[in-house]
Image (cartoon, rainbow, N blue to C red):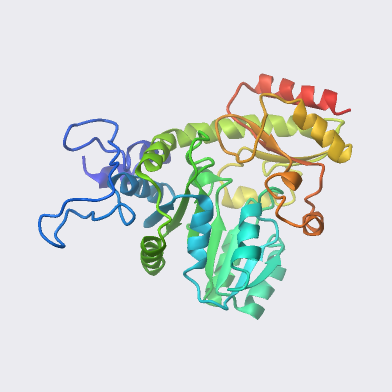
Length: 389
């Protein structure tokens, strides 16, 4: 069947069929893994579109086609890890350029920006939820790159993507939105004006905690061409097997995200009423400071929750040691529920003074709510609280 037939269908149908067409040779409904490094040519320079798997691979091409469709983008470039995708994006702007970045970002991104490429660019970290102040900085500094996380990791702050990316375009800045927490199912930054939508595919897109990978989606032909040139030159390409695993995982993205959100709503409401909780942050709650913006630019609120437990770091430690369905581990977005303390785990690379300045305190706990039975999840949290008293 023609590919255009599927491209006009709903998200769930595209996730199942775009890039997942049956193998044309055998009819296999699950496409094969092209676990090969090189490809035979009929004559020097005459080939069937593939020369070397660092550059292109049929399994990876299928995944890129699927993800571009889901993000409403023209192009997708997948990489070996989320951090390699982030690094690749920094390589397409000139050295010495100014970069405006949100002040609440994933610890690995902060580490890359402040220790690896810190001498290549002039970074300004700011609270991008303060839209007018951020737009003023964009107009004043005229950066080459605007980097936004929305929602942020771990404080779940939400930025006005439309207004900020429009301001970036006015000064010729490339805008990137880290869309990892929402996945293409709940938010499409390119539709909101971003040049690039970035994902750590290790999280919701794959959804099964068994690979690390990154994805860069764009509808800008020049950006896509330069990213592919650099990927081929530097080499952070995703393996065929990992590409196949993500292509399999993404088939259930829509139903997984619905269940993540359903469970997260109930967990957030439970936490909001709990006497041992200082405060809860979840975009779906009316108490979230950017709840109205969330409703405007997202079609759902995801499965991530941040809350502050009473009793400081010691209470946090006891809580984390006494939950079991919420497994104590870094990362997020898998079918199983995970819990962590960002201050001493995923965001430990951010200096303590900087963490506390943005509200990332030692009693902050981040939940990645999975798809288990909700009654079991709440009972597990209650057990953690009982031991944290």
